[in-house]
Amino acid sequence: MAPVFSQRVATWQATHGRSQLPWQNTRDPYRVWLSEVMLQQTQVSTVLGYFDRFLTRFPDVAALAKANEDEVFALWSGLGYYSRARNMHRCAQEVMSRFDGAFPRTAVELESLPGIGRSTASAVSAFCFGERVAILDGNVKRVLTRVLGFADDLSTSATERRLWDLATALLPPADEPEVIARYTQGQMDLGATVCTPRKPDCLICPVDDLCVARREGEPERYPVKTRKLKRTSESLWMLQAIDASGRVWLEKRPERGIWAGLYCLPVFDSRAALVAALPPGSEGLHDAAPFLHVLTHKDLHLHPVIVQSDGAFALSDQGRWAGVLDWPSLGLPAPVRKLLLSLEAGQAASSSR
Image 1: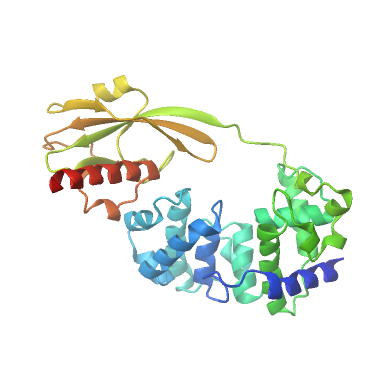
Image 2: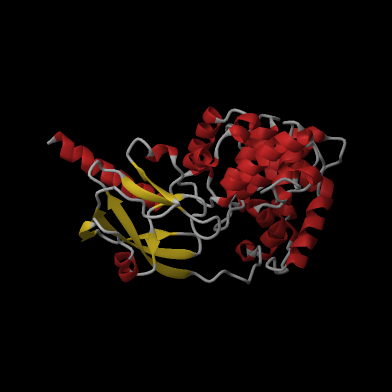
């Protein structure tokens, strides 16, 4: 089945696959790598704007390596999974220091860089250098498990290794680098546009007659993954201390945990803990409307508490007073940015009266 499957997928991609995305039709490993990192756990429609902004500010790996972390986080703000941004910055620095600014050409070497896993490494090496290596992102797992009728539980590492072996066996010949790239993109496109998680469009699939799941009539039962992360919830109180000039106190979060390394309003487990931490000179305590912020596996119930301050002190040695002009240059969690934008709008309305 291997040569038939790979050739059909590559041929289908040439005529029906996606070809207008800004990271396609290029062999620039920087652009391909950047897109692959951004697309992890994130939809294409969301990534498009971020990708363009990153390239405008950091047109190549050297520019990204020279940037400070706060600047990288600021451009990433709102995209989520901030460890990607931190690893991406470190990766750029290692490309400069270890490889003289040129991305390595093999998946094995690429995987040695921070934040680059096996599938991302394979995507860069296949697209940019024509290496005969398999990828196995979410879309490709779905396509392959359905075509092969692979019903083993992918929540175990041993099972995933077996699927990697099968994915490698299905690759086109090594002497066809153009086909390798087209086939790799074709698998992604099939999973994104035809072999979707719900209601796959089997009638227009180029490999429908090869597909075990289609013959069984149950494509949605693949891929099989029984272990699911338990969803949790947490309530947090956020101190929004504002001084007379409208500046807000922001603290840099620890390197581990939620919003690691970002600038954030001080966070407390209870309102009582927040009140107990208030310094002298604080007044006008006001509870703003609580709101829900949804993470992948956790619901955060956030309770902003607004406090007027004289701004003549530091709430901790990890923070700073930041005004409207400072906020765009700081990496901020999405809910904090939302609160600050609301504050900015209120300040603008007041000044116009």
